[in-house]
Length: 134
Length: 472
View (tube, rainbow over the protein chains, first blue to last red):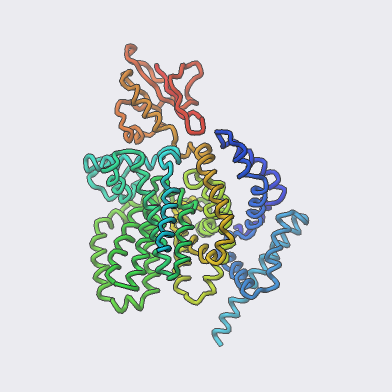
């Protein structure tokens, strides 16, 4: 059972390979040869930006409902409290995205990132219940 | 006055985006549209569907048993337009335009804030997800209109006059017999609404029960078709139970797939008919405002709005999650309403900031939709099938017999009213029985040898050949 995105298929080197294909695809689907307009709208900057954003966000997509709920509860409380841990939330997928460390270490960083945010969510849920009981 | 003009402009924009070149792009009627068109034509002519059942509550069609409302609507349009391609697509487009209008009133009723309501309907008017399904004969789009209208009338009934509840129930019931996703969504969502407004309903319990009973009696003729084996045949064949792997894992994956960033903002549904495949279901610029919207809704004091929106969003993702192919933009079409409202909640303070991005994204989308999309995905729309039949109609008098390969469904021949043909499995070349008779063969290009002199080659919009026609 897969819980999180540990495939490492969405990385910077993969994007470098993909973008030329995407541009070629856009050019091929232009029958009248209005290449200027096509390249103006489907430009490299746009492709790179959207691909990097897609890959960055792919580390926040889950395949397990419980973990998704815990994680996003954590994210909600991080934002609500303006916690300094927000920095961890924003940074931890970057190591996997830009392939900064060896695969092993990247995986560990990713796991720790998920665990910290999920634990923060869990902690807040429990502390809420507690305060209500008292 | 200004407010009415703005609303009129939004609806006009929605109409232009949905009606401009509606029969040319998407390039051709795909096979469900053709089946809908032919069944409606048949109902108009004889009162029976193509299988000879009179006034059915379920149309057998390709043995997938289509729900009735959209077909009868098309039949109504064909009274005025005749059996044309436009008559199949226009009901869906008009439903799309009206959804934009009804969403305005729905949000106004929900929040009582004019700018938010206007923003919501403007977002829906330009939504890629909604435009895609409004421009072709999709039943789900009509169901979406009924749901929005029904929910609006429900809220209106709670605030003003309880008698409006009757209309609300009628439209919600119509939604359930228009498309299968509403069959699952409407009862549960109605329950949520009733729980939220329980106080008000308790005060008028008598009239609510009477209205409910009248609606139930009116709904009785459709109940056998809903619970029959045929009515659930398609749902059963597409069910998650038939998917590989364990049920719980599959359900979680399918359900969360409908909320993944990749699906919503980057790639969209990977069926060529359901999206342009390159941009996602929502615009990328909506992402930050969507997140802000969720945060604001969770923080705000009026909890009933939050509950209505989130339960709508979470319930609308159930139908695609319970089927094999997920995420699925058509079965999850009901999600589009809460997604736009949540985005608008986040956007309403920053709309001036987002305007240039929104305009650029709209231009990019229209460029892809009108230039690239019909070239790249014409095959998904069965482009060339109709053109083949129309060509055959011009030459049929010169030939005694016409053999047609079975990759061209008979529905196309019926819809374009072509009678003289003999269906043939062209695995081998047909043997000529009568040498003095002139024959014609219609076959896909991969089956035609290069030595044969081709009479006519039918091409798709992008230039790929679909069928080759030659004498024998």
